Length: 202
Image 1: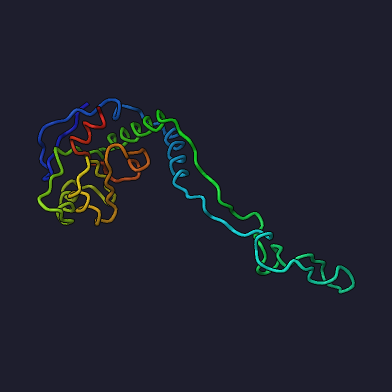
Image 2 (image 1 turned 120 degrees about the horizontal axis):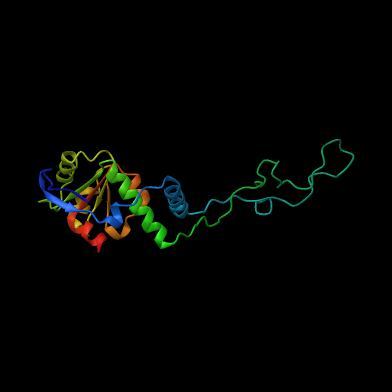
């Protein structure tokens, strides 16, 4: 399958062949949901923590005697029903990690890219060379390409492009090896440079 090859002015420079392994997989919503749920779970730090009745500060003395006062019986002021007491069933640090085979991650990425291609949200540029590392230059290219509010730029490491684009709200920049299904589906348009696409296909 082929798609148009554009320059940064949005003019057609020919066509480029899209690799079947990346853009020829029928999207499966159930499968993508599984992979993306695992990806988001793996982003969680799992550091939420509260103190139980055994960890809060306070005396261990019985507040008042068991019988004869007319008040409800209590054995500690550190129980959850007291002010400044511990928390019952609160979160403690734990790992939310879900392991996924590399083959599943690759398949999910291919399905996500195919879904973007089907919605006409994939652009391939011959290069993303800008004269100066200026935010305005990248913003003009994105406007020309009608990239939307959350464009994803996939290119080989380019310090000038990275510096120029990092100050634009919503823009995500990645090298091919870091690409995953979540960022692809969560962006408005995927913009590949030709050399980045060739590296992914290799």
